[in-house]
Image (cartoon, rainbow over all chains, first blue to last red; front, side):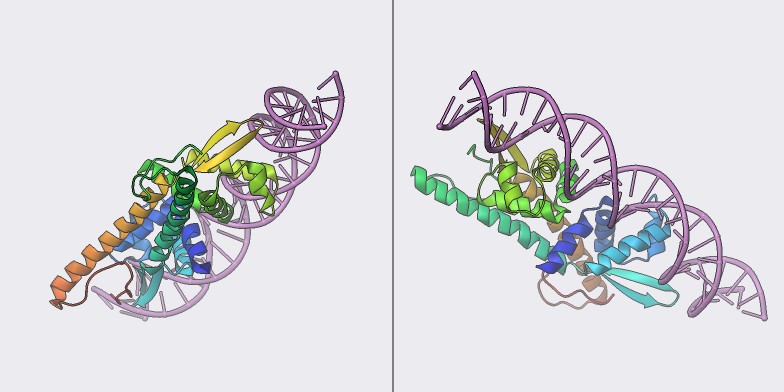
Length: 116
Length: 116
DNA sequence: TGCACGCGCAACCCACTGGTTGCACTTTGT
DNA sequence: ACAAAGTGCAACCAGTGGGTTGCGCGTGCA
């Protein structure tokens, strides 16, 4: 659960989300990533540190450059957190439905919120 | 897609994540939320503004207090973004497998990253 | 009618973070 | 052997974001 914190923190920045999406397609060096972003290589490098702290990215030095590769597993944890919120929500809906004795549609995450 | 940005920004803060989780269980006022957090009511109120901007929360004034209710739908969008990253990743794995001509296990998000 | 509760708004503070530049170091290629 | 590419580290800067306090206003209750 502690790692999930870091993942959301990491994903909280637009540049970092861009990097994650880029690395999902292909491994790349900081310089390569900087080429497709409006910021300097060092700025990208700092973001990569954050991503590495969140264990979303693995660095591997090959020759004179460092290749960064995505590790999607922590992302799954984040998704699980979101699911958990959805479950709490569904549970709440269920108990409300019990009180109101108003059986109805299937519970799920994609659903308008009731006015409670 | 633009709203997704705001969702991740909102979820980037631990306090906000706590609030989201709390609101998943029951609607609450800013004062009530502040009671279970180590910060002032006004601080909570500011967070609620962020969450309302991300459309994660709906405010409803009832009497002299304001009740905040979760809207889980934007969360689903965030989850979809994560899925999208996973899809890119899988596509990449597939093409790599094509090159290496090494058929194997099913693709998915919960899987160790290959050393490329 | 008066008091207490809950709220929103505004001003202010401080720390962190995303960004920059500069530099020294290793590796590669000619 | 030397130049160029790529990196990491450090210093520095500016904006913002999370926090606080203070205040005035509406609402409910005794």
